[in-house]
Amino acid sequence: MIDVFVPVYNEKDNIIPLLDELNEKVSSDFRVLVVYDMDEDNTLPVLRSVMDKYSYSIVLQKNTYGRGAINAFRTAIQAAQGEYLVYAMADLADDLTTIDLMKGKLDAGSDVVVGSRYMEGGQRNSKGDLKAFLSRLSGVGMKGLTGIPTHDISNAYRMYRTEILRKIPITTDGHGGTIEILQKIYLAGYAITEVPDVWNDRVAGESQFKMGKWMSTCIYWCLYTIVHKWFLGQGKPRKKAIKREDSRV
Ligand SMILES: Nc1nc2c(ncn2[C@@H]2O[C@H](COP(=O)(O)OP(=O)(O)OP(=O)(O)O)[C@@H](O)[C@H]2O)c(=O)[nH]1
Ligand SMILES: [Mg+2]
Image 1 (cartoon, rainbow, N blue to C red):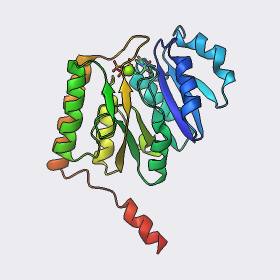
Image 2: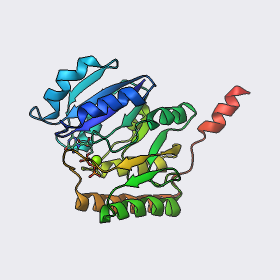
Image 3: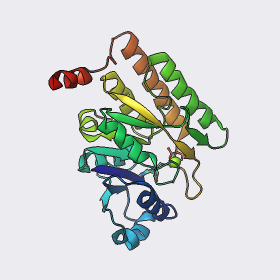
């Protein structure tokens, strides 16, 4: 089973279209884990009025680590019940048809699958602003500099093995925490792969993204990975695949 984790901050106009999209586009077994910060969040009354109508289960969970999307992620990691967890945005930015593809990759042995806007077949449909430029630069740059097997380190839309998330603590506050976790997973030698994601800017609601904070965190974790990869020799693939072959003999 997949936990579809959705952090929400005043997403009243997006939550029903998101649930409808999940219904239409995902055929794997999943439940939705919505994590909110405050009782007055405008997503909640809308969600409560429809949540019994879907064929899959929807769990509403208050953030137990304090406010913010990364604390919502920490809460979801603790509350998850599935073997896999996908971090999905409520703002309808990502292509949810890839959830089934991500699951297929994890079933085949990957540990994390990144929704990738910058690989062949992926797309980022947004205005050509500084954020778009830096996001692409960090993705392509880190692939070239460290060999991390994804073109898109800055997309939070990813599916993980839940057990791995429980082993690696996130120390960063803010959206950059999702960069930290991917870099640490890479340095620990887990298998990362990617699938193309067609990404669109949000139409309804307001972005909570904080450029300055994100940029400093991104630079920090990119440098951290470069140093740990090239000077401390981390990031070597685990022997998992070889062990599996051995056990079949
Ligand atoms: N619980 C919780 N969720 C949040 C918070 N901030 C953002 N989110 C949710 O996290 C997801 C992504 O947030 P966005 O504000 O779209 O940020 P982003 O996708 O990184 O940035 P954009 O590219 O501007 O869309 C959405 O589902 C938000 O509702 C927060 O403080 N608490
Ligand atoms: Mg967004």
